[in-house]
Image (cartoon, rainbow, N blue to C red; front, top):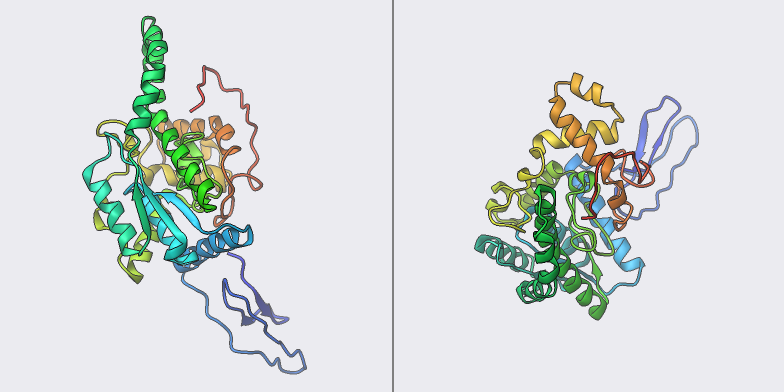
Length: 338
């Protein structure tokens, strides 16, 4: 976090300005004593990160002339945090939440999303994506069936990915249409862990104008959600405790595709932020298999991160200007755009 302070010749801080707030302070350098206004204590770390995200949203929305913000509210932890941040930044009257259930959306996800919107006093609407998904399925079925006649394991996996991504892209179209119609900025809800390993859909959940938590690792998302609930409970307890899921397939869990976040996030921190090699990460006690898997996902998905919206930097090294990596990394194999 950027902090404004004044120190003396010995390096001792004699004045600290308020964080995330405009302030004019006069420091009198007359010797032998400084005359300074009252110094502001540092925020606790979680509070500081939270306020940085709030200020980032507020500044971006207002300074770019948007009439508020809109986001997809899934009943998951990431969208719950982004909703709370947006309301704290702009006020409930300037934020709108859209629920977009599918056949795979669990009832508790809808219940939790509605609870979050009502707890924060946000206007919300429900738009089922089933008609759009069915329409695309009808349009594409002849081609998909022809492909199925030559199916192998790879093509079967591609069909699964295609079916899941159609759902995400239907949601992206709905949200962008409402953003265009209302002049509100569409906030995406992907976190840094997902952006690191490419666990996101181009032109789907990555579609939007601003990504508030793109530099916030998944484990920190949970910490910030707990912090926000300590001020006022606005995120249901089961959102904090249930296994995260994109709900694009029956009984889907993030861990079906990724290492557990309590293992993944420390590996990503070492690789992305501390610039450690695979050998160094393994020497620190991490599984060689999981390290190789995580690093391969990071390297292969630079092309996705280049197409993501801007966001707020809160770590020592955010993707983009802080960490440049070739889009083409010599990956051996056949890639599909997801």
